[in-house]
Image 1 (cartoon, rainbow, N blue to C red):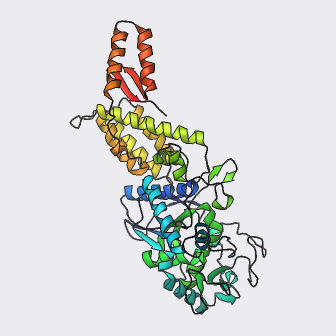
Image 2: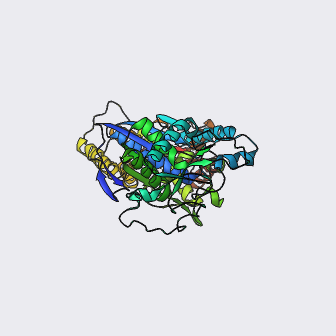
Image 3: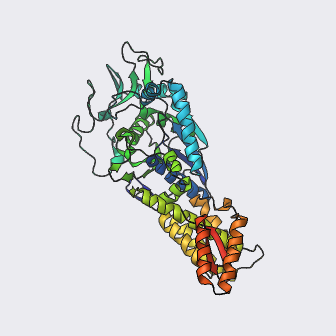
Length: 467
């Protein structure tokens, strides 16, 4: 029985999809004006784990992700420059070139992290007509007003506004949450359509019944979700920073326009935290996946690092912690190679009850609101369990990796250079003759070449020296 923590109810709930064994999943995608930082990528890893857990439980998932290539302003106060336009000026390119380049970079990042791509990618610029139609519906129902810089949603007209904030609904004074735009009636009101500034020709602007301009950021996800998944759909995900404004405003528009809740389950991932606070492009303290790779880290080491904390817990980042994750991943791959060496497809397990226990325990953990840290601990317990035959152990590990996504099946057999094999043989000869000092000198030579030798009952075992 899969249980998920629903931000809407502030509790774990048994997951029941609208349609038997079919799930509509919407995940907020990137604003493609710059590289995604590893804090952003932590959220996408969490959402990938969720998708994998749903599929593991036999659900067919229809996954939609948006690409925000217009409308996301520098401030949540509906002020400042469009981030895509700002990126274009920074790099002296067109907004279209900027959006294409960073969309491609994002897709490369998620591929390197072994994140499954969505079934449907949707660009905000491809849904302008749909967004205008949604604003027309809201206007007809009396939820909008026009001021000098655009069309706004009047949050005072929707009694349920802020339902995602929990039981202690905040009482916000004007300007308490965000800088007030002249003419805004309430501090929580938000832009549905922004007018192009007078005398300024934007690269991205469209005609509308209210004037030439561009859509507000919060409208696109409503349109994309409803168009591709219907209303309501099952699950909507994003970072915890989306709760108070972005997702709250999505819910408000959908409820005002259609009289229905946009999604039934809302899941949010916590921040990745540096010593100086959360990572943010606006603070200039970002680290990208490319930065990790340039420092010699395997992208999957970062994925492994993220698996060690529950998605609803803050994850504290340091280079030392990431190095530890890489060492653990390398150790895991080494153990898998050892297990495969002893694997026999014809072997018959004499301990099926133990195998069933591991399978059941694993399912219970991942179904308990994605308890991946404990599931990871269970994997290591299995690896060390001598009662489980290597054949069954390897099958279980492959099964577990359907969730972890660490590419266990693709681990290549270690190719030992001829020189290393010769040194190991020479060392063995000295050990048998009790010339331990000379044997130790050869061991040091082996390690200097990037390998290590482990003495086992079956003989010497060669592995890569951990980084």
